[in-house]
Length: 389
Image (tube, rainbow, N blue to C red; front, side):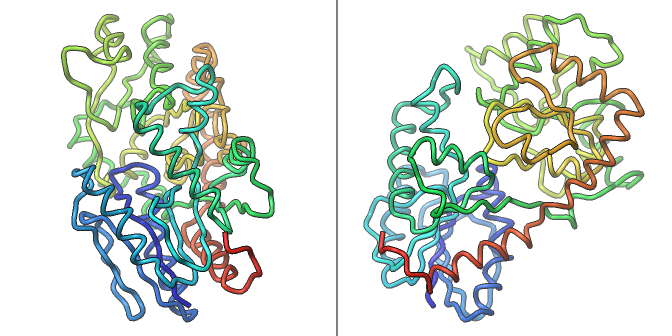
């Protein structure tokens, strides 16, 4: 059985990049030990390093930084590599536009946000430029229409898929993303936690924000709450942000509000944190703040819970499904909801109760389970009497 896997996103891209980095080294051995010949299409700068008999790795000639040339190579290479494949697998919500002559197609659709922001801009903040939004709608639509089997990261994402495209339930399978329990675990008293505190000059108590600054991530809620609400100093802790502070003559409205309200000392932008330091950063923080308006899954809340860090997460899309009753859930449109959660997370009894629930909840998610279930779906496609797409 010949399997071709399209996996060009790198870890720096975000959730999809992390998904690919964690899934590939787990799923490829499963496929090869079950008789598959696997070809994986990677970016030129992908860190994926697995080598084994039965695996062929093909890297694009262009790096991700060279967007135009990279996109061109992605579309062309995929068509050539996919020729004669029994199953062509895309792990990143899209299929190249160039026709691919494979017998079956399986696509992981992480979310359909480019469609939702286009169809319901009053509900979902527009993040993509007109051209980028058009491109993503084009390649995602092809993926949905062509796929014999679609995997989503959550039931919420599956519902969005049905709402936007009318995809029948029998074409969609929900397989949750996972976490690496060898990395994300309790680190109380570990030297690595103190090392991270020292390296980033962190305060004794702080909240952590692990996400981008795009509108749907809703960093605005935290900034506006700090700027406009009268908060008890005991809960108004510094917020450490794992992205670079935007620079330029026209800063984003959230950054301008931070500066205009005199809150600069309460927001620490430390830039992207290396993967091996992230667990210690979770462990050092008082709580993870995750007020996102839309998620297909949401890895940081589960990672934080596994590290014994309480989570404050929004009640939108996949997040209630993922965190269950193991997080302080808020309405991301209302600062008073965030304020109430900040008070709770600083009460020892409530905090300790949520830590215990979070540790238990995090055990429900593992990359090994994700890989096993995904491999099952790939192998099943070679024997099922599905349409040619």
